[in-house]
Image (cartoon, rainbow, N blue to C red; front, side):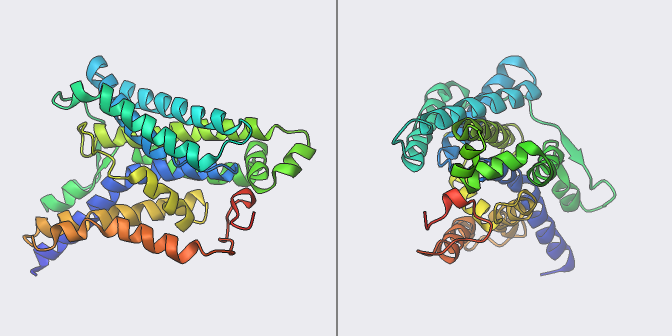
Length: 306
């Protein structure tokens, strides 16, 4: 492999980490907030798909990508809020409800999105950071999603909020010990419902990134399971918003290996390398989710020993 081809390959991996990693970042941050409150939301796959469709439809009808972004956040908050409300009822299981909401979200997206498969919608603008380079591959790799800085800011804000604010401490208290939160007079269902809804809104921004930036279109296979992978990604990040940044970049780069090899003329094993993110997910779950053990950083209410 020549020097130019090697640089192109590395740039393609970097570009993939920046493009593919953005939805992972938003969905993992949303799930991190939800799980910090003591609730797990397996319905984030439905949230991601439905918000992606809503973003594309709203942008197409309004002519503004940013209206599509707002629509995605709103739809994500509504569907996740429904999950939070249902899980607040007696004898309702988080996991079963999440699976039901995943099916509901994807079903609604497929039904209402059939008319959106062919049209083109306005796209989120790209921020060009590679104009200093004479190599087209580098310039292309460093054209980043305008939502990426927002995702990075949200990660820092959540990290700071969990550590330094009263609201963040209440979320952590509800996730670590519901009995302690109740003893202090706080409504655990209310805290968890709010955290789940806000987490859904954040995840919805990931859906907007899918249809309004990369790949920039709507189809029924748009998410490729990223909403479910986010659960493993949060475990890998040890429930730390800042670590979610690195985890999202890792999964984004892993998903870009196949296209990167193809971009330098290596077509063998293209589909095999596309499975890398799913293999990573399995490895993380097998390595961390051992019976009778507690993963470091896990909220107490999600502990496997409870």
